[in-house]
Length: 395
Ligand SMILES: Cc1ncc(COP(=O)(O)O)c(C=O)c1O
Image 1 (cartoon, rainbow, N blue to C red):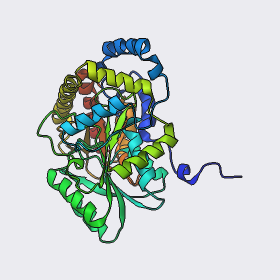
Image 2: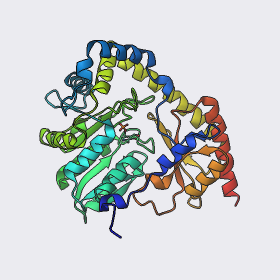
Image 3: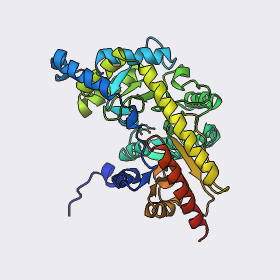
Image 4: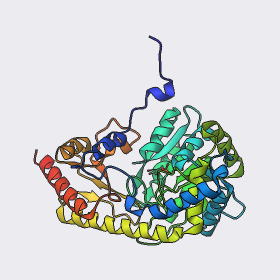
């Protein structure tokens, strides 16, 4: 029989996270498995008014082809925002992409040959891992410590291995919620310069800080053009609009644009106009502040319930922003087995293995999301989960 699937596709299987999305359809399941923003934050009325105005006044623009780099006024807005946040310098450019996910894909296609070593964090974002897998990268990992990716482990790896790209989510990481320290960010950049590798800084959650002080992005400290920066409107406006953005050294950004043209010609103009009209006619910063407040509150509710209910041997992160936290049980636990028990009792989360480069091992950690669950359901779900852990421990 002829082989149907290309090598790059044959090894891919639907992510556990996607499979768990089906569970969300069961209204009885309390799901901490997703990663979606709260729909309570969607600016419905504003966008309704904007959409009507776009179709009335800018229909020919909205429904026509656009340029691959993105709708220029939106790209300019993002650029000015990144400059004001200190992420990029005034002379640098920005392109609009179809979600932050597309920046990962474009970067992989622009930089990574089959067999090139790409280093991800352990744990990391499944969408990023699967992207590098799909290009047959030699995917390795280094552990995430309480202050971010282990630069010592990376240095050790560099003694024997030529690395092409490090994929990091340094701020409110998915899935751990951990933020990389300034010292480690600087060290990572030094290593990149010394050993000639590139860094993909994936930062969809950076604006969602509800405690503590901002830490400078890696991109902002990059003097030699080694960092490709990926941002997103998904968690600060709407994931359904599929709007992200990238900034990088001019030659890299140009290459991303050429590849994007092959992929989807451009990000839908209508969606770019919706976002642009929103950010120019309404207050994005106020909207982001509301998101921070809500997620900070939900995070505190979840942590409070975990502190009260979880057995003492459970360790978990206490994020300063973002929408996830990461719970680690003693080695004897298997997060997949715990997941099956949880689903039976109507509570879901993401088992650790789907966040790992090596998915075939047993992991005792799992991811909990708190952005999209009502407070009383967070309390109920954590109570059930604590019972599930205790039941598994007793066997
Ligand atoms: C770390 C990380 N990167 C990228 C993405 C992709 O986001 P989007 O394509 O919606 O911007 C996500 C989404 O969950 C994510 O968690």
